[in-house]
Image 1 (cartoon, one colour):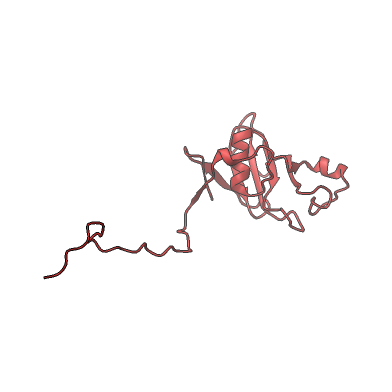
Image 2 (cartoon, rainbow, N blue to C red):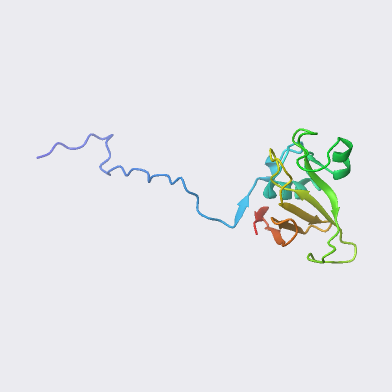
Length: 158
């Protein structure tokens, strides 16, 4: 006859934890905690800039208009050589080609995206309206994808 198990020993075998995968599943949206957006933080990516606009009703403080950049001596290309961490944004977007929805009183503003540390301004832009429409272009205004925000403040990427 076998000895009984001591009372502190369980008779249920221990099951090891499954290995952690390094790959994340593909998703069509990313959630960023709005509370984690520093009002004085510098943001350059689509998700954070959109959520910053929603939270603070203005562009992050690293954005300067073309007029402000020119006053620093900027003539084109990256503005970071003239102001550390700066990106171009806050200028009116005319929508002259009519590619974005038009409505009486609606105006559009543009800003560069993903320019931190870049040599040029690149082609990626966020164009947003005064009535909370957001459009992403990665080909310098040739095409636009509307950016949606769900009820959980998740940015749904194009």
